[in-house]
Image 1 (spheres, helix red, strand yellow):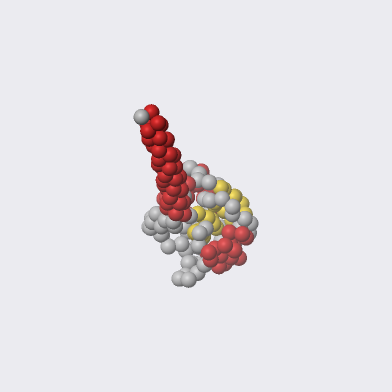
Image 2 (spheres, rainbow, N blue to C red):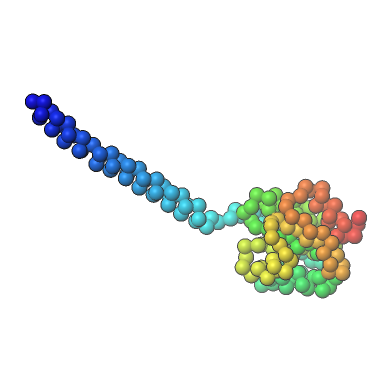
Length: 179
């Protein structure tokens, strides 16, 4: 009988490694599937939150020179026209889905109406492919970025990142010639 037990144990021992191997294969396959699922979910293009300056009831922008945003007018065209006209201008580069940008959008939407008659606003969505040339020309690498231009069309301030409401108001006063 001991020989039969030994044979039975050997038979059981031969059965166990394949079972363990199947468990290991199943675990590895499960981890691989989970990793693929995470990558697919992470790389899905999510719709950005519906936050924009227009949504925050931004007033129509009309500068002292009478230039306004026209339908189909690209930010670069508006930017060039305003600088050529000698209009103090704020170029606001942002996306609608970064945390710092949404903070700055709210600040701009709150403070800018006080200065809309003296400082023009060029609102630039950095993810719009039509704005690539302007991003390169303005040397924008990080968002949010605010660039203030004086009446000579020269850059007077270049600010990267969200800034407090008081600092933004101060920079707007400077751009408007009040400081």
